[in-house]
Image 1: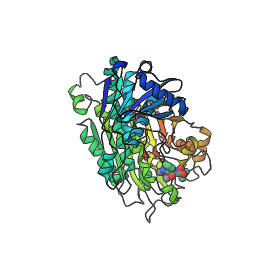
Image 2: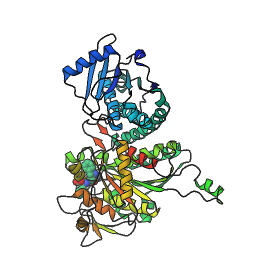
Image 3: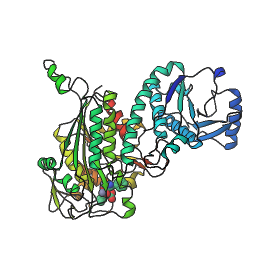
Image 4: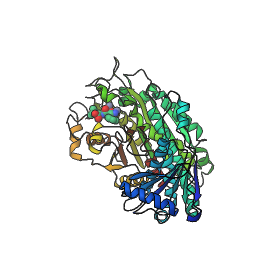
Length: 515
Ligand code: BES
Ligand code: ZN
Ligand code: ZN
């Protein structure tokens, strides 16, 4: 993973301000400010000629005269600068710099903008914007080293008023970890399914546990062990593939609450803490199975483990972020393939908690593996379960490529997840668990069937199906089929490919727990 050096420095008085970087980014709320008079004159005239209005997220690159040639990158803020506009502005400046082959970028945040935002949030957004925009998946590129070198930024710095530096620095450290976690998720999604197999996900989980210095425990269940536990739905999906399935269970415990530590302090029982299960859909390739997908629909189906990738990404930094909650991660990892041993339409499978499912379409496989995973999640008696899944094309029809769907049986959980997503800049929109549609998932011959048999409302009926497996446990389902993968670049933070969507929302959510 190419790392990009970030720096934070106090903003110097205007008379001493030199625009030395190849690209200098500034924010524009109605007029240009906080720059040397000569620059203001030159750039101001340029912006007027170009018809720059300064609407939110509108950007314009102004070439500055002089040697060496430099660029002033102006980011409009519209009515008011928000953390998200700042984050996207930093990202857009970095994208611009990369496209121009620039080596250094300086972002200036002066008052009044600097006092409207929390300095921690500024540092965090700066690190996220810069690092995530700089990301590229280059593992399979010819002349990889050369290309990378040509595109390498050597330094991105942020200038803020001196008093804000310490808090902003804390934000940069946190944002850097969050970006790293997101980039890990991107790497896992971008890796082709021939390599990113269930076994490879297991390897990744092992690496994460090993790096946590005992904070994360890992249990792997193989096919036989899953069978013994009664995970009939998960194994039914797996059985068409030559790849061995695996059930991954990670447990992060905050420092001082591990088994040994608890035994030591038995007299003073450990503080009760929030326990949360994060569930990720882990289909490493979704061909559809015997209900096979058309070629166009199959092209991107290596991304069908993006939920698992987000969970693993989050786990990769939990120990370093010193999260306060007990966090479980559960992933049923397998491939969905057609073959002589594949699951067939009409088959009936039994899930871990006993409910049976009539499988009418083998391409609705995510909900089958999730049914068993949610059952396992319920067993650990958590305060909340959150699942992330590239579950339905219907959710993309409803919300487009950039917004994830959110369903929950618990208003508080839904509110805190929405707030976390808002702070993270990952758009999430609530959709209903409309009870009346639930009847569509009842089967004549089993407890449930895995498709509604109707043309419309597929994202909602999928959520209603999952709801059958969580009982009374507070639960939220996030359908990330759209935003987990950027087919084209729209958001400057997300280069084409896996986006790592969900990682930062999960980390923001966990930050708010048990602290
Ligand atoms: N993995 C797909 C959903 C998907 C589609 C994710 C596009 C990302 C992009 C899922 O397993 C699936 O095939 N869903 C079907 C459900 C249908 C058979 C009820 C779908 O959405 O068409
Ligand atoms: Zn499918
Ligand atoms: Zn799928």
